[in-house]
Length: 94
Image (cartoon, rainbow, N blue to C red; front, top):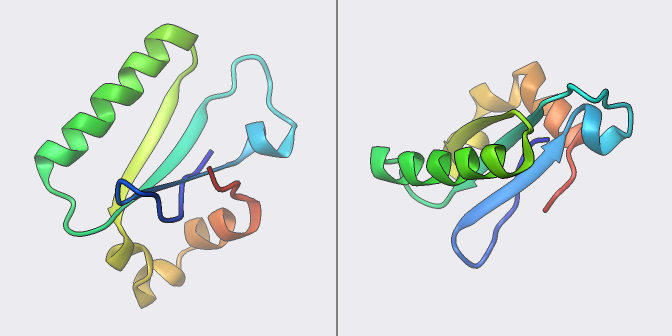
């Protein structure tokens, strides 16, 4: 599960991987890419990771999160990475 796209709170979320594709196993984790407007400051990342941790406790599902700015996500370097292509190809926007 990766996360992308604008939201009213300046974040975007796009899941991809096994779960959205429908080939997840019972022990599959969720991979989430969180895109933020503006800089990715430590307090913002901590807040997001705390909320994800609460979700993990409530659902007993492991969630791996990557937090990036829209600027970093849209950079030429990021666009050249296989991870970017996977998110674009397999991602499900939330």
